[in-house]
Image (cartoon, rainbow, N blue to C red):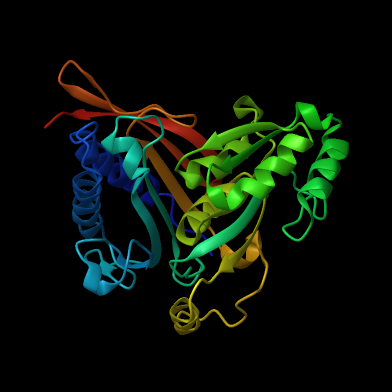
Length: 314
C-alpha cells in the first residue's frame, strides 16, 4: 500500500509550523517550553488534516499530556487511516541552548505499516550499503569495520563512524579509536545522526550504538527511502519496560529487526530544521517572512529532497 502524495505538502507544513513555534524559544534555556511549543503546534496542524490519524510513536503515555501521546487520535476523522510517528522537537537541548541540529520530525504511513516501538532504548546500526552481511548488529565492532573497509575499498583510518557521546559507548569508542577510525561524536539527536549515512557529502560511513527506540523508527522510515541498511534491537532496562513492550505487541524481546520488519510499507518522512545542522538549515527570518528547510522522503514516488518553505512570520 502507498500513501497518497497529496499529503507530502501537508506534512511539510506540519513540521515547518512546529519548527517556527519552537524557534521562538531557541536560546531561552527552557527545553520544556520549546518542546511544548512544538508539540502544541504539531497537534493543532495535524487535527486540521482530513485523515483518521493515530499516534503510534510519540512522546509518552496518555497521562503525560500535553505530549503527543501513543494512541492519541488526530485529524478530522474523514479520510484514510494513518499511523503517525512524531518527535516534535528532536534535540531539546540544542534548541534551549541555540546549538546546531534541532529538528521537528514526523513519519506517516497507512495503518499498520509502522512498527509500534516501545519508549525504550534501542541498539542500532546503519550504513549506506544495500547488501546484507557486510555489517551486522551481531558482529563485533572490529568485524564491522574490517568488512566495511574491504567493501568500500577504504582503509579503516579513512572511515568515519557516528555515535552518541555517552558513557555507555566508552567501550565502542575506544575500539573505534584503536582501529584508527575517524569519530563523529554527537551529544543528542540520533535521528539526524543515523541519516548521515545517506549521502557521501556527510562523510559518515556507519552509525552505531544505543539510542532511543522511537527515534530509531523515525530514522528508519527515511533510511528506507534511501535503500540503506538498518538493523535494531530493543533494550529493556526493567520488567515494567518488558511488560509495556509485550502489551504493544512485541513478542520476542531479544529479536534483531531488519529494516523491512519495522517499516512495513510506504512512508512520508519530514524533518524541518529549527537550528542549522548537518542535514538542513534552521529557521531564518527574512523581510518579515520565515524560511525553513525540510528533508522530505516518500519511497513510492522516489522523492528524497530538501524543500524550502517561506511563510509569514507571526
